[in-house]
Length: 415
Picture 1 (cartoon, one colour):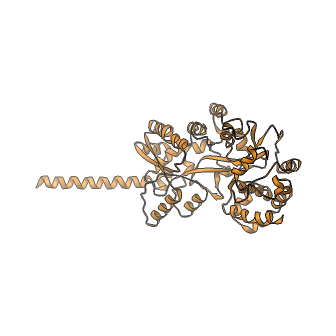
Picture 2 (cartoon, helix red, strand yellow):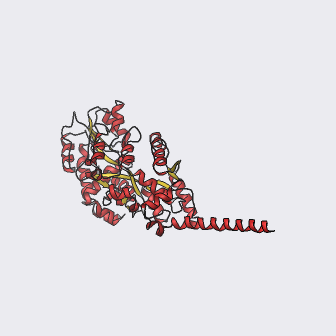
Picture 3 (tube, one colour):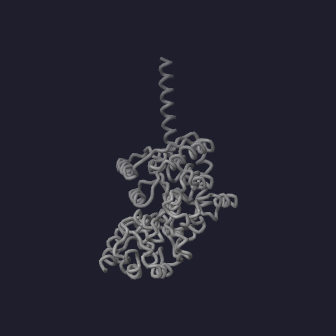
């Protein structure tokens, strides 16, 4: 009988200890407690745990970067296991939505790669943990926290619910054997188009790149991108501030390829025109995009890039932590490492990904700035400090549709 009593007491103690342990784990990961923890405590609590990062898995170079470069170093430096899991973002957000409705506070995602409309929906429906990003030492030290492309994600305020991981930027490409001095402003571009009839065009506004070209011109028409961000999506505001844009597009139209009677359907068609020498400029939403075409002999070796001084749109992508991540401490440690100069400079190397850094180049040490300069992204790619100087954030996604519809009314149908 005595042995049975001792056994029952042992089981009860185990249950109580387990319960307390679970409670302590839950408490330590609550926003208020984590917010007040020292970074060293967060690192300590993450040791010998697993972090599951859910991300798009369609690029071999990105996958190798995570699996073969990041994961081993995180294990070695932080005793943290990193598991990469390929995902379909809308499906995972739907899953998170169902878990939120069911008040399921322990999920299976620790980090989610996200931006744009997906972030907007996740933030509005309280699917994310945070704010957390300002607790990360590498955000404090290396990220320009005032930059609009960091504080806004497609017009939605980030408010610390995600941390920037990388970015691409809209640039123009040109053949320097035919264009000696590329334009620096929209006025200079207007003059160049008129002086070189038929040698410039842009894709239809239904195309992603053609629409991005219009969005940049919309910024110019409004005069200050901050005004657009402050307004959010506002059709009346857009109508009242887009006159300069429509006048500009109609003024250059007769001097475009085929006198503006038709436009390339998409960027692929514009790139073909450029590769065949019919036009002398192309464009795209990736500052390093020309390199692969040059290497394959599609673009001339004399291809270079430029941005206009009024700015070029940058698309920043981010990392966030789901509201019910079972390992929030580990997620924060992992994201902080992904924002280290070491990890960011390796990510920039085209041997893996070639994705631009999310860090402020000026905040890097002299040694890391030298490493940044030594990374050869190709002769057609603008320097990191130039890209940083002129980057502008994306605006509310609904402006994409507004521009598509109004471009037809204001430009195409006025022929």
